[in-house]
Length: 538
Image 1 (cartoon, rainbow, N blue to C red):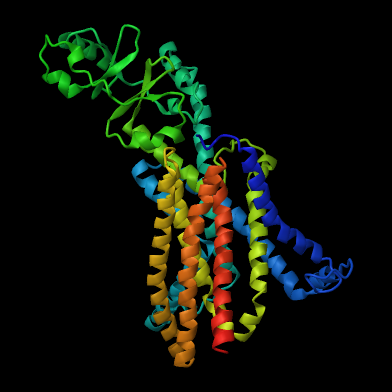
Image 2 (image 1 turned 180 degrees about the horizontal axis):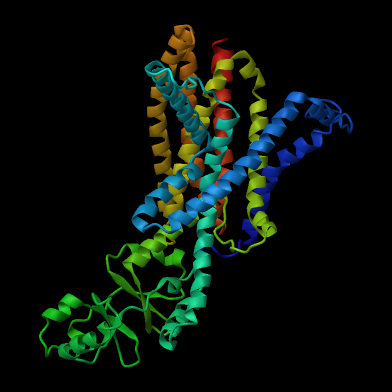
């Protein structure tokens, strides 16, 4: 069954319950922000007291101003830079564009904390190299003095946000460039002769999601009731207009597809041989109206140079070449990347700003609400942070690893779910396989964390040996448990959406990110409270 079908009643109810679960904590927080007391459970009357204090706090208002300024500037800079980058990528040859697009997609697929930490390490390394170079430069000459110390500040903050935004801009602009090319092609088509215009109109008659929109009319068609000598004569006649001659397609008197013959077999055959003896009748084919997403997986399994495209009456109307298949796979992967990031690849170049915002805003609002939920959960462990402030240093480690494991499981699961013939037993096997992978990786990384973090706390934080390895042991245990649960979450959630006929690539990404954050936070701080405070009394 196609993933594009409308959700069933059960699916709608399930999605309603999911969103109710997601939005209920947000609504409660909003309501209690107007509470006269600071309690989150007892209503003491309506009041704007907390908002008045918020806007009178100079430090908070300065933070709001800095946040807005960074947002506006980074958006403007990233939009300009990302647009020019997308234009450059679109004009590149595929061999160069593909690896660059893969690198561009890494920040989109990865957890934000990974890119943030990477930027921080890059700045620290760059500033260190700059200082060493400046010291050497100033000692080598006395004509020009180079500043030796540069610091993290507004400039580096702005640069980091621009780096975050540019990949999303590129993913948004690239589909628009392809749409612009299509409009220019329609204008140029009017200048062509009737036969060429008919072929172009035939291809354009198919929806862009159908395989017929990617086919080529460059192929050679041979009647089935001729001899080898007559077939060679027909090949020579058609080769003047069609250079795709490695495979010849055979049709009967009604132009119904019968099979194919390779050019090599035709050349070495005897002249008086009946052509029907050379036909490969089991040659693969596709229908022009088939969805690209439904048939691309099995098309990739064939090593043929081209595959015929048939109409509803089994008559050949074109072929899809291996180069076309590569382009289709690349486009499908790019679309999946965009959907996982909550983007859309279906915006028109002239689409109004309001419509673009309507398409993107729902998931952004969901992510904002989910982030507030995670923040409120972290607030429940204030006493743990107050008594053991060192645990805050390693929170990002747990969140990062849980997010990465969940994303990996999500990518594997979505690819497996593309097979519509997947049985229940195979799905169960996938769940247990991902759980084993997550547990095994968690055990390896957990043991490494216990040793490395224990040594770090003991030698650099001046903690006792017992305290250092107690904390690192708690971190290792939390890492093992978080990676195991995140693997299951990254597998089960897309399976659930697939079951209720909702595209898992669209719906799973934001939900998995938040669930994994919740899992990591509760696991980490829960174990820290249980082991370090309640049992070991630190």
